[in-house]
Image 1 (spheres, rainbow, N blue to C red):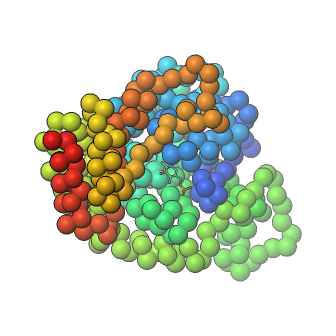
Image 2: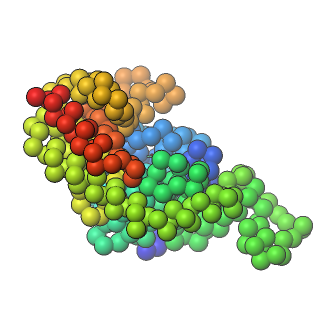
Image 3: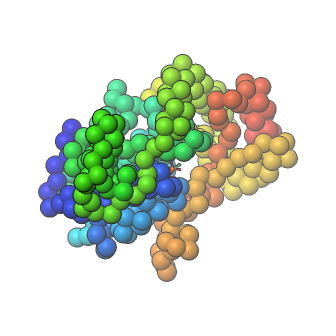
Length: 333
Ligand SMILES: *Cc1c(COP(=O)(O)O)cnc(C)c1O
């Protein structure tokens, strides 16, 4: 798929910036004042990537069932300055991504997928990363696969590729390709701001081993744990589960919604049994750096009081998971 814009984007305005110093994310046409639609319910890394590129993140609501970007809410926030939309595949689920893409196509927006949670997943039989405009993966230590630190950007846009490849090594033109070919030149040119965001060989070696383990071990284990949770927890009327048990999703986290104001009680019960939980995430529009007077997102703020992330990682054993489930069941009795 080749992304076709109805807006004049020029390669000269592309900006490359890190997600946590290592993962480049490309924003087309990023100039001060450009706006980027993004769900508020995401890790601050998504917001920081947008603001680091000089653009303004515009916080949007999420779809309550999947915690992915709500295209109807995003549509209301379009302005003349909207340049891109950043859907987050929350917990690995693509949610209403097709509608987000339609919205983007109709309005000439770049689509930059935050697929930090979604490595190895697919949608409609296609791998995530194989059908989008620009897709960003994270290989941070806790993600579906890791290279210690690092990430990857996938795109079929030649201009984005060239810009990202040059930018990761101080924007020295075609430096990576020439170094690997043994033809590094001392007569080079630099046309834009560059960074030191290339992946080291040490990280790449870790990543390659993880890649081999992924299909065999990491992916099936994550999927099995998610389906065991779903099987046992779906009957609790105070819980709402996210649709994470389908074969398309390789869940990075296992968030549930605890209704009736009982989230913190469940969380404390788990903590008393030595079981750590998470809250994904504090909405970004509530953070000092991104807060705007009088701005609120009711759906997102309500979700923030309900969401509870249960342990899910490949080394979690069946009996440990059974214990988590037992404590949740007891706390909700
Ligand atoms: C982890 C994460 C990131 C950042 O990835 P890094 O590789 O740590 O920079 C961005 N977005 C989301 C949703 C994440 O979970």
